[in-house]
Length: 65
Image (spheres, one colour):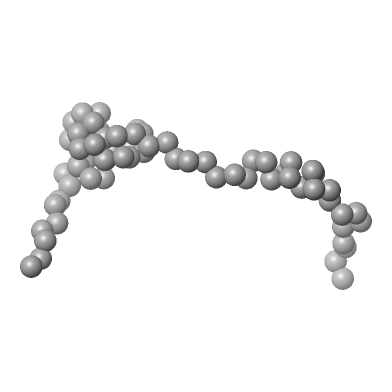
């Protein structure tokens, strides 16, 4: 059998260890061209613009009838 903990961890010690485990909300900014919420410093996946100019060409999908 593997070794077992000698003593039970207190709730305070357990909770202090978990203090940094909370999820953080991602920092979103509006695209300057189309207004879509995107991560900062990243090319907009919706329109392909970065810092006010088109960096990649994004193909628009046609709707099928």
